[in-house]
Length: 368
Image 1 (spheres, rainbow, N blue to C red):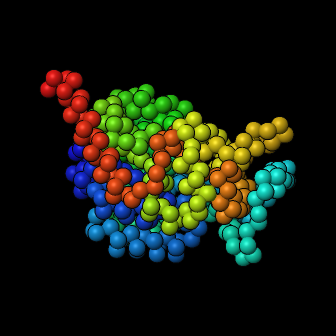
Image 2: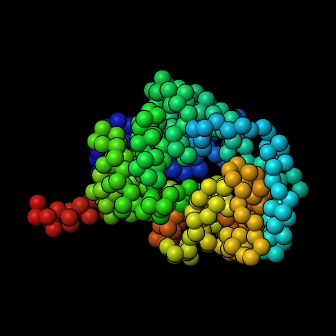
Image 3: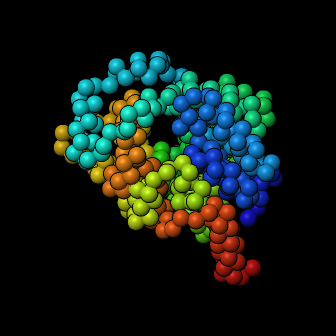
């Protein structure tokens, strides 16, 4: 399993792993892939500084990346308190009443966090500034092209820039803006995702951007067979996310059994694409929390970042409660294949082994 991206990044396998856990990201990099740390959970730069220092020291000198959430169009924003004034009272009332109905207890006194500052444009810029003081080789943006000045800043520091795309026109716009690598994220993916399935989207984007722009296939990839399929569609590597939620290393971040119970029992049909998590379409595990937003009288989700601010405390409470029937979890349709919790190194080894056996079978069918 070797493509041009392996040489470009100094990695053994073209497996890119998005994760909010530094322990997972470091383990993927040590195992030969490229761990990409999601930065949106960091509400202050000091915490991110500590975590990236830890990454520098725990990846055995191997490369890693970071992922930020930064819209290309710079929004007018104030503090989280300023933005909260734009949230209608009916939305706040709905969230409070829903938590009460679902039996979600309040957080212990003094716990929790104020707002979700990591989703703000200004904080995302500070994430990039901090990252450039360390040694990532890639900056990925979950909301398409970052602002052009940020792309230029990364290029000047020797980093590649990747951006997610859910349609060929988005990919072409990214290339025009200077993005180096396109992540073709299909409908099956967890978190923010578009409306076109990977089987159609990946070759469409590969053909649209041409042979000089590397494409990573994303969405519904959790096995070596699916990696082989993505490369057969023209991708030079894969961008994976949900499968790393089912690893032993992730436990240090999630910290509750409700999370594991929820995904271990789920099938591939137990997810829903909704705007209730961030204000933009994102795929989540279907639970009583997601279903409550479909009930009669439920308000429409607010735009980003207001929806984030609205549900931030609710998500803290839900996740702290550990109730698998209520848990709020971004996850893709590959959840149906996540049936046990395993070490990252074992997952990577299995992906590679199944890829190799799949390619051998295909060679036999082709008579090569």
